[in-house]
Image (cartoon, rainbow, N blue to C red; front, side, top):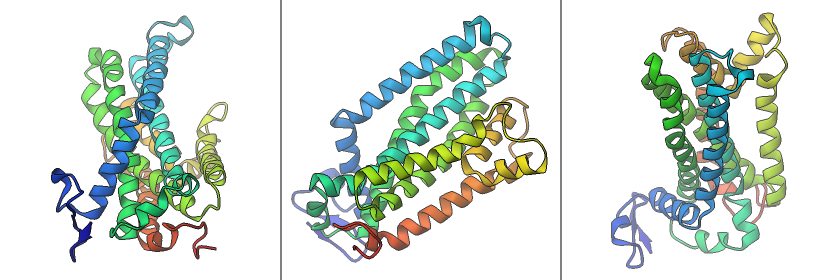
Length: 278
């Protein structure tokens, strides 16, 4: 395998369809193939479809949940899809480097003439494919609940945009954690703890605290502010620019996490954990 000055891959062993593509694309294709052809991604998406089926059934028929208006039911299903989708993306990212170290497969990847930044970007793109799969699975459920009130298009567009930004940010965060962790167990534990800390304020009884403190708590939390923004558009019928400041935290998390992954890629994509490989 060889690369040119632009980081493109040319190799007799590379499938013809992937030759002359950027290195990160080749890595993403290989990682995605391992994720989906290996069956792990399909099992996870199947579990998500079962969960969304239960949530949709309860939101539509259960007497306890009948007080939910149709907009709130759509919002519930969409937020569950976003939450589960970003969770899976984070977990795959957290396993991306430390997991390969422990399985002994990272060394062969590092021996290929692909820049280490490209390896990190490729792994992030492959992890992001799980979010897109979850979103596709969620589309029929949103349609079932929202078709009567002409909310399907708006709900799907806002869910796709906000969910993609949030999933990309958490994929990058998971990979950074995975790169600096000394074990895969530590990487997964730290990543799940972080996600729990981000989701906890949104699950408090009665929601986040009222007043300026509660507003600030939601605004600085990428997950809380993203879900709040989705709720404003779907439930309250706000325009996309009405609560635009709530997109600041998810976008900032995406920029910062992506920047760290790019800058620190050569240091963290290595055979030993830690920024300095120690």
